[in-house]
Length: 169
Image (cartoon, rainbow, N blue to C red; front, side, top):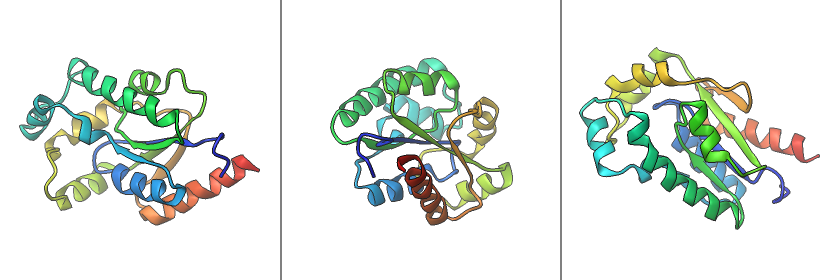
């Protein structure tokens, strides 16, 4: 892959869509650093989500600022893969502003599939009761590469790699 072209990827979607799994696999295949937005949530945000309380824009502000700092630092070296819900367009614009080179990988799934996946997760702070609020908040972008989460993570990553090859030709 041409390191100057599409070396920055943000995998987005609601909780349970497989952002972390797909992001890690993609980063491994591309030899890029991986960042999980969940690792940057401040303790008050985590506590709210554990309690089943949806985050507000105000709650997300410092979190997005911390993520943006990481993205800027990673982009200036070799690129990155970031797994981040990025539910609203204004969050996506903030994360990608100033970069000419971010490729969005958007993961889409229906409520029953996502609830089933959330029910299988262990040791995660996200309360499955918050899924409906995320589905309501999610502003599906018109841009980016979209994938249904009914595909396997390996299949989605293979499709992303194929799309990278098409762009780099």
